[in-house]
Length: 326
Image (cartoon, rainbow, N blue to C red):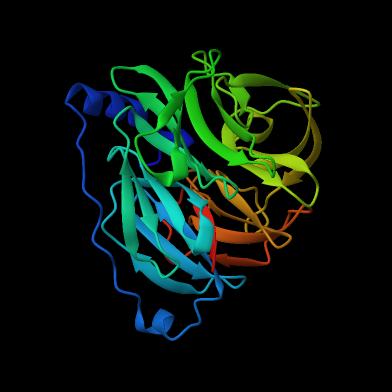
């Protein structure tokens, strides 16, 4: 199950709290999956997209830009948000497992971090410092989530809070090492926050020029020098879009909206997390709306609209995406 899929949100959060009351399980790192024969014959210099699916407890690996399925990795517990590290590594959060898995470019699980303070939802990697940021959606016993920073991607983490925030979802670093992350207040109102580089305190960022209803992807776009923020409930409807925000002195202003369509021309029901890559946006549609199968897509960016590629043979409840390019 996805912690942020809109169809089952209440049930999922209830399940999380029940797990917390029962001393939510800890798991060890999953056993590595051997690369498939097809993938073993491909050059590891190619770029691939890793797609997590908590509905099947698997991670799918697709080629880019055509989305040929290369491999299905098993052995995870509720894989969710993803982020890319150095050397093509990919980090995958494991929600109820309270674990962050580290995968190599070849798809092997080569390490993991424990998260004893909550239920990890999203993550972000700072290539300047090697620090790994993890956003805990919630803490046990119905307590607020938190922002965890693992120095050099190793434990134990330093814990940060935004005093205005209750739920923590996704994040991304800019080129200066500032971390931006989204979430919601205790009342369910969207929030955007920043932990400036070398700061001990996170702060709320005001958003003007429009309304973001439900937290999605967060990524710094070096091409436009703007922050990219996803909305899983665009215009307060069962549709997803992404926004470009200019950031100035602790305030964000929406400048561009990118709408996303499925391969049949309908609106994407729920892209939980997306990622920018080479003038494209890659993400999956968790189609709880039931209009068509869940699928992974490649859209032109920032124009959006019709996808240039899609794949629907594997996805059940696709959640997170990250690019692995060695």
